[in-house]
Amino acid sequence: MKIGTVLQLEVVQSGKNRNRDAKKYRCKVIDKNEQNLYIDLPVDTKSKKTAFFAKGTIFDVTFIDSDEIIYQFRSKLVAKVKGKIPALAIQLPGNNIRRIQRRNYARVETAVDVAVHSDQNLFSPFTTVTNDISGGGLSIIVPKNQILKGELAEIWMVLAMANGQFVYPNVRAKLVHEKRGNSGISIASFQFLALDVKTEQWIIRFCFEKQREARKKQIFHR
Image 1 (cartoon, helix red, strand yellow):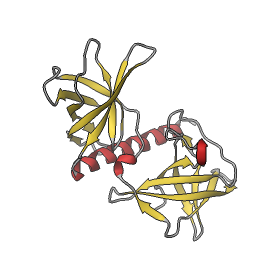
Image 2 (cartoon, one colour):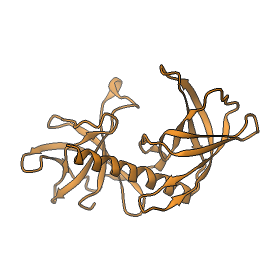
Image 3 (cartoon, rainbow, N blue to C red):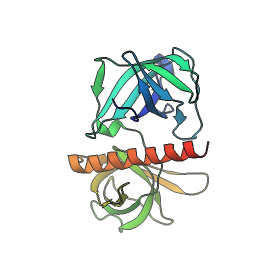
Image 4 (cartoon, rainbow, N blue to C red):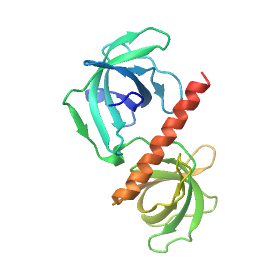
């Protein structure tokens, strides 16, 4: 794992306290030795606020390597390091590291242009933007007066990559649920179905670049 690798942390909760919607935190590897990784202070991915943890806190740590493969390991906070840049020391995983399915990766809140078509022509095609996106699915803002029918849809996306390239993934997706918020805006969530490897890599890379971008903005505005 290289210096500068971006990590996602999730606090491990046991038994009845385990929560599938647990908060996720983003940080970066700033140094390492034979026993520990040294990370900058984690930031809540939603609130963008710096998070603080007690010594001994257990984390599930997720990262993506240079080959776009996602790995996860369990680690423990062993020390808080004071200095010019405050840091945390967490245990290196040793051999206890596993490759995980890409679609388990965290969602990123960002607006992506999409076109949505019914798989069975049950509603007219429409364009809109995403509310969030991940390697496993996305949610979209449903235009006013637009009615979604059926479970399956085809979705075209326009992903603006960090290198200036635009890619246009086309995916089949299943409507998971549709919910109207207090503002009256309706959000529909879709799960991707049978992504090919290249499309999955594009989406994962896009999400990771957006996380990096958000992290840089957070550091700049501190």
